[in-house]
Each structure stands twice: as structure tokens, then as C-alpha cells.
Image 1 (cartoon, rainbow, N blue to C red):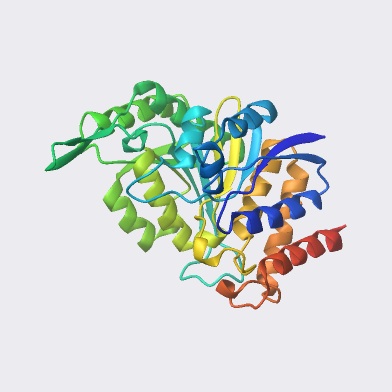
Image 2 (image 1 turned 120 degrees about the vertical axis):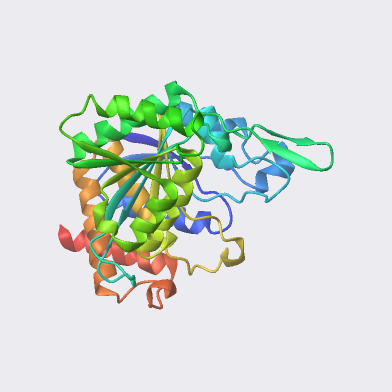
Length: 335
């Protein structure tokens, strides 16, 4: 029995998290869910969207499935996602982008995994005002953080049969910060002679991804670029509705969809749960439940290909819960 923390989140979070929970329970893996709350609703009760009880639960179970949480723009509290990653040292943000039959897209055959450093760069939030006329943000890149995300990427590539790692950077301009990231990643690459390694300036990487995404296998990037590039790659395969994600450290891991909380759609039972379900499949694989993960991914693939019980964004009329029902039915048909 696996004990897993469940954080429903807010906005559409509870709906997609529940859909994913139901699918994982039908996958054959035995999971005991420990439910804790985070998000805007916690502000009035605890004075913070991230109560200590959430961190304590994750530290106890070591793994969590998290729904999206609303982040105030421009003011208020820092992103709960960023706080979780830093508090739990979840330094590797892993975001696969894979094509599925039945999902409207300009591309087919895309299969890219993004490894994004998760704890520093501009997302460290080291910034301040300079009087009333300017603001300054400090871009922090360390050798330690660069080395461990690079090593995680190359270990994953070797384990999963990936043949090439591409390092994205802007070291031609930011010679010290991005230069250190590139230098460190190249040094790690030298320890993996079985895996091809190249590097591309990040703006050129954007262009090449749009022109010929089949050129790329695994992308290794600092925090800010990784966030942007992972959304671009999600666009190649149909959008954020099908983009799963994981935040992984040496001791703990939190799995979540890449998309946000979409508060305007909350409570309507209409949003696409695919990204959360696929994030759940990543969680299963992390727990060592490889067969259950494979079954969930295959069930999702069948539902998407059939296009009969999918949500409005995929051209269907199914509700969130009905699409989850379809994935569960596909699991049952697989035996």
C-alpha cells in the first residue's frame, strides 16, 4: 500500500484531481490518499495559502499529487508552486510532451522530455525596488544546482533509452550565469559518452522546436527558460490540457499538471483532466508501479484516439468526470 498526499488545489483543481484519483484507484495500484488543503481558501483560516500541514504531509508520505493552485499576479503571496519546490528541494521539474492520436495539433510524432532546474535562476525571487523608479531581480545560478539537474537529466536519458540531451541557454549574452550552467552541464555530459549532447541558444531553440521538433529528444534548461520552453512544447502536442509534470528531489516528489487553476471554469465539470491523469501515471512510475502506469497511459491513449468521450477542448461533449469514467472503462476493458 502506497501512502500519497492529495492536494486538490483551487479553481478547477478539485475537479481534475478527483478525476486523476479515481483513475489511479482503478489502475491496480493500492494507494492510501492523505488529503490536505492549500490555496486561496486557506488564506482566511491560516493567513497563508500553504499551511504547514501540507509540507508536513508531503514530508511524511514522500510523494504527492497536486491540483493547480491560483497565484496572485503582481502582488500578495509568492507562488505556492515555487514555495513547495524550494521548501522540499524539488530541484528537477520534468515535463514530457508527447503526441497522441485524436488530439488536434499541427504536429505528429513529437516525443520530448524537458528537464528544468527548479530552485534558482530568476524564480528564486531575489528582487527589490530601487526607489520608485526601478526594480531589480537577481539571476542566481550555482554550480551545485546546475550539476544535479544535469545529472538527473542524463540518468533519466540513460534509464529511459533517450539518445540525445540538448542544453538550452543564453551563454552568449549572460556569460557568467548561463555560462556556468552550460559549463557544468557539459562536464556532466562527459560522464555519459553513450548519450549524444549538444547545446542551442534558447531563442534559436524556440525556432527549431517550431520548425522541426523531431530533432529533439530531451531538453535540459535553467528555471525560467525551462518554464517557457515546456509551454511551447505543450503547444506542439495540443496544449496545456495534455501536459503532465513532476517536481522531483532526492527524497520527495510532487506531481501536477502544467496548466493553471482557471478559476473562471471552476465548478463547471467541463475541463480536460488528461494532464492530471498523465501526471498520476508519472506518479505511479515513480512509486515503482510501472505496469499500472503503462495501463493508465494506454487507457488515456485509447480514449483520446476514439474521440467519443472527450471534453470540449478536444472536440467532444463529455464532462470532466465522464472523461475520467471513459478512461476507467478502458482500464477495465484491458483486464
